[in-house]
Image 1 (cartoon, rainbow over the protein chains, first blue to last red):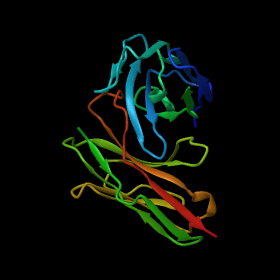
Image 2 (spheres, each protein chain N blue to C red):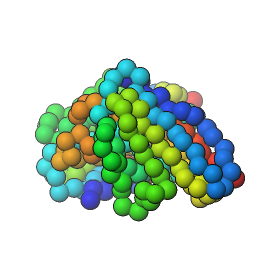
Image 3 (cartoon, chains in turn orange, green):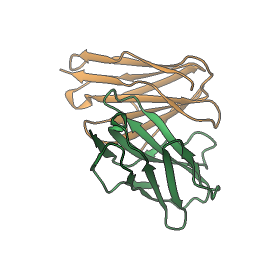
Image 4 (cartoon, helix red, strand yellow):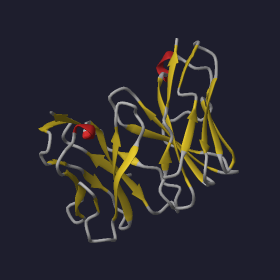
Length: 114
Length: 117
């Protein structure tokens, strides 16, 4: 299958700082990328959907000013958690697809805010 | 909005046994896709099997098969000859077709499957 790479795999940041997570499609052009959040022992919740060159569409209840998503190219989307707080600590997973093909998942990023 | 329900938080079976994980969903759409994903301790999401709602034939992938009942909105996963490596969280997921590829997945809460040696 196609490869989606997320970086970093884990990150620790201080409360009040911002952290950026990258999601790259390595061997295909991702017209759509999705960002999910997973709390410990819970399911994945869709946060937002981004199409290359367009503004991201956020799910209800997700603060778009806190979770900035940029999908500037067909192989890269970034999620920036701004002014992070301990409650933002979670596992963030991206997935990417080309057109209406299968969506492939990155390996996830564990964010810890201290 | 779609909902996906997995009513079995945890299941445990002996190696080589057959196990069935249940999933029900609710939607007003007629065309959609259903998935089973495996999430091992590494937390990498792995696609196990995919079913297109307009196909009546149940999908199969080696030891994995589904029982898709569209009218009942049921989508169960059967794992035959279970192996130790099947131990993982299993998520049932729904994708609508109205978004032209821009619909994300709606996941169930997951079933923690444990295969005992």
